[in-house]
Image (cartoon, rainbow, N blue to C red; front, side, top):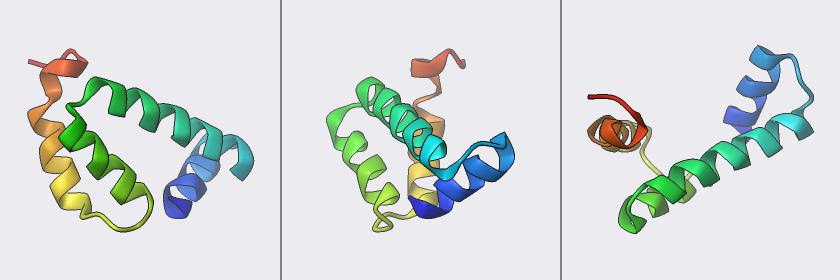
Length: 69
């Protein structure tokens, strides 16, 4: 998660503490909208245990949950 926090901090021009909160909020929203089996992958990825490619594939398949067709 630290890599994502640093990226958000740099790109948004906010502190790392603020970026960490933002990442946690977004992750929570994503997990709320995903089936439980997929939501656990978000946690794993943020802990550095997951496969980013696998998570990206799943997110693409879930586009309808976020307004994509």
